[in-house]
Every structure is written in C-alpha cells, then in structure tokens.
Length: 236
Ligand code: NI
Ligand code: MN
Picture 1: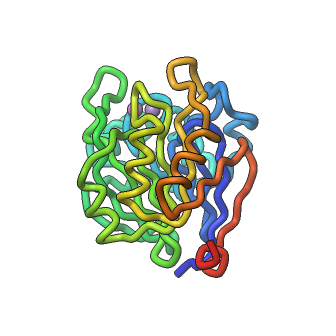
Picture 2 (picture 1 turned 60 degrees about the vertical axis):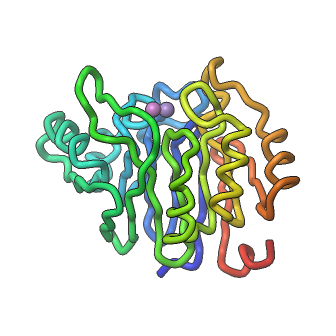
C-alpha cells in the first residue's frame, strides 16, 4: 500500500506516477509538442493506456518493450497492440476490473469519449484509478458525466488528473464541475495547450476550482515532479 506518490507531467495526458514502482500513463513523447524529453529517457515498470488515440498510445509499445513493462489497456486495444508486437506483455481489462501489476492496484473506470486505433475500433475509452493507499484518478480523455459520482463513492480518489482543454474533452467549466463531484483534495489539469485547439489558462481554472470547491489545484510545469504523502494531503 503506497502512502506516497510522486507525479511528473510529461505534457498532454502523459504522466509518470511513482508509487514505489513507476507507472507511465498515456505515453506520447516524441511527437508531443509539449514534451521536453525523449521516449528513451522514460523509465517504466508499468505502462497504462486510456484509449487508442495516437496522442495517448504513440510510444506505448516502444516504452513497454524497452523497459520490459506490461501495457494495461482495454481488451480490444490490448489485442491491437499485441498485433503490433507479439512479444509485448498485454494486460487487457475492462470497466470496473481491477488488476495488480508490480504491486500497484489498477482499476479501470469509464470515460465518455471515442476510441479508434488508426482505422480500427479500439475498444471503449477508459480512465484509471491507481493505488490502494493514496489513490490517483487519471480520467483519460472524457467529457463530464454524472457517474463520476460512482467513482467518488467507490474509490474516493485523493488526486484527480482531469483534462481541461475543451474541444476533444471537458473544458475548464466542465472540469470544475467534475472536481465538485470527485471531491479530491488535489486536482491536476492536463490535456491542454499541446495544440491550438485546446488552448486554456490553467491558472484561471485553478482560481475557478478553488473558489467553488474544497480542493487545491496544482499546475505543474512539464517535467516538474510533485510529491504527495498522506500527511501533506491531510493538511491541504
Ligand atoms: Ni482521445
Ligand atoms: Mn487526447
């Protein structure tokens, strides 16, 4: 059970969560205009992919292979990634399923979005809950939806990573509403400013959320590492 997590944002929806083991979520590095490192610089014990769109899965197989790490994804997307490389280890799961990989508990939760993998159907899009001590919710690409209430009731995420870019996902207003549903102590915005279509002011989002809810918004810069333990979370 991890009572400590460090979170490093690589730009867009890509994060490294270190809970004793390193989970790399939605690896999009080499073609990511916001990235400051290369995919060869990424260390991973587990790779988790929320859905099949290129800006989430681009470097998944490469990083998984290089680090000898399994990829956690929805079943259908897992099969497609397996076709790409028969040696990559795939953990293909589905909604409300939980798996424990490298000692890290990972639960799949719904997201309202679409998911093609190239021209192929990539299974449904998902979000993830990581950890069984401190819990981190990575929402994936999603609009706001009322069943975020279930995510709150069942998993009580301490930290929520929410898209705020709009156009493809929630914008700041919807994400502010989502923060109210999720009741996480910490909100971290993602999936914004990578491209022109998703330009947003994260500081405005922070003001909005903190005025409306009992949550603290952290706006990391790319490659800044933020650490949380139980004590810091309780003091917020
Ligand atoms: Ni997407
Ligand atoms: Mn996306």
